[in-house]
Length: 563
Ligand SMILES: Nc1ncnc2c1ncn2[C@@H]1O[C@H](COP(=O)(O)OP(=O)(O)OP(=O)(O)O)[C@@H](O)[C@H]1O
Image (tube, helix red, strand yellow):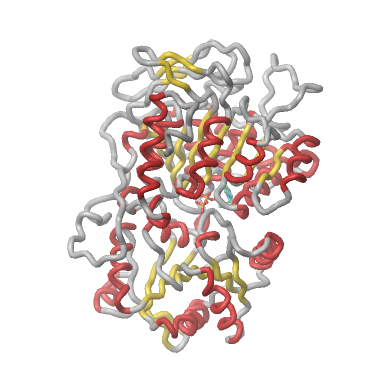
C-alpha cells in the first residue's frame, strides 16, 4: 500500500521509506511511535572525538559551504579522518547534494559561554541580546555550529532544554533580514521570494509557539518573514497571506502544509531547510500520507538524481533536514538515514554519528513482567537524557473515584501554582474540570475537539496564570512551553515511557524545579515500576497527609533517609 502511494520514488528509496511505514501500519496508533525508554540510552563509542576545530564557526563562518568549492573536514582525534567534500554549486543559494561521508564517531566540548562564539551573524546576536538570551544551552552550543556547517542532524536532548532555538538560530543566520550577508551576495530586492525554510510540528499549538519564537527575534517590522500554516485556521486566508507577504519561512502542521502544497499554493521545491519538530510524533500513522508529500516535495528540485560512487542512481534531498525530539526511538534513526544525507546525532555537548544512537525496542506496558533487566535502564547505563535532571517524580495509589480529591490534596501539599493534568480519555476531561471547580480550583479543559478560539483562549489564560489547572490529553504533551508550570499530574498513567517523558517535560523547564505525580490504582503499580526502570529515574510512592507530601513504602523511606 505504501509503495503504491509513492510512485515517484526510486526503488532504493522505496525500500528505505517503506520499512518504517510497514511497521507503523502494523501497530496500533498508541504503540506505533513509542519505543522503550531504553532506546534513549546513549551508547558510548570508543572512537575519537569530533573536534571543535572541525565545527568551529570562527574558523569558517560566512556562507561557508554554499556556492564555493569548499571542503568540510571533520576530524577524529585518532585518525584525523577526512570526512567528505562538497562540490561546487551552480547557485550559491543551495547546499550541495554532496557526498558527505559519515562521521565515524565524535564527542566534543561545546560549552560555549555566549552566543557570539557560535558563528551567528551580528544582527541576530543583537536581537538575542535584546530579547535577553545571553548564554546558549548545551544543546544549542552543539547544534548551532553543526547546522551552520550544513550537516543534516537529529537533535535530541531533554524536554525544555532549548531545542527550538537550536534550529531556529542557524535558520535565521541564513534566511530573512537577520541573516549573514556575504559581500558577493546580491540581495533579492525585486526578485520573487521563495520559501527557504519549512518547519513542521504535530499540533497547532506547538506550530504557533514556534512562530512566536521566530517573531520574537525578527521583531514587529519583519515578522511577516514567517507565516504559520496550521490546521483549524482559515485556509484561504493563509493562502492569500502567502501570496501577499511572500514569507521566507513557514511553520505548520503536516495536514495543512501538505494541503496547500498539493493545491499548488506553496512552492517549496527550492527550500533549503526542512525541520521536523517532535519528529517521532510526526512519524505516527496519522501523519503518514501528509509527511510523505512533504518529504517528497520540500527542497526537491527536478533533475536531482545523483549517482552514488559505486551504486545505483538515487534521489538525494538537496535540502538540509533537521529532526528534533527529546525522544529518539529507532524509527527516527531509520527515518533520518533515509531522508538525510549522513545525518549526525546532536545532543547536549555531543555530536556523533547515528551509529552511536540508542536502539529501541517496543515495550508493552500493559502486562506485568517478571523479567526486569531486559528493559531496565538502570543496569549500568547512563541516565536517560529525555527528562530534565531537576524533575522529581512520585506516584500515589488511589481509587479511581478519589483521584480528583487526591489531586486537590496534592496541589495544596505542593502549593503548586500552575498544574497540567493529563488524562487518556478526552470525554472525561470535562468531568474532571467540573469536579475541580466544585472544589474551588480554577480549571479548564484543552483538547483537539475544541474550537480554535476556545483552545487559544484557554491556553492564553493558563499561560497568564488565570487558570490554575489545565486538564488535557496528549495534545499538550508535546512541546508546550509554560515556564511557570510547576506540577504535572498523570490522572491516568501514560501508555509508555515516551509519553511519560513528554508529559513530565511540561514542568521543570530550563532548569526550573518541577514535580510529576502519577495517580494510579493498586493493580497499576507494576506499570509505574516499569516506567521507572525504562526511564532510569526514581518514582517513589507518596501520599498527601495534613497538607504535606509524605513518602510511603519501605523502599521509598530508605530513599528519603539517603536524601
Ligand atoms: N539560551 C537560552 N537562554 C534563555 N532561555 C532560553 C534559551 N534557550 C531557550 N530558552 C527558553 O527555554 C524555554 C524552553 O525551550 P524550548 O521550548 O525550545 O525547549 P525544548 O527543548 O524544545 O522542549 P520540548 O522538548 O518540551 O519541546 C523556552 O521558553 C525558550 O524561550
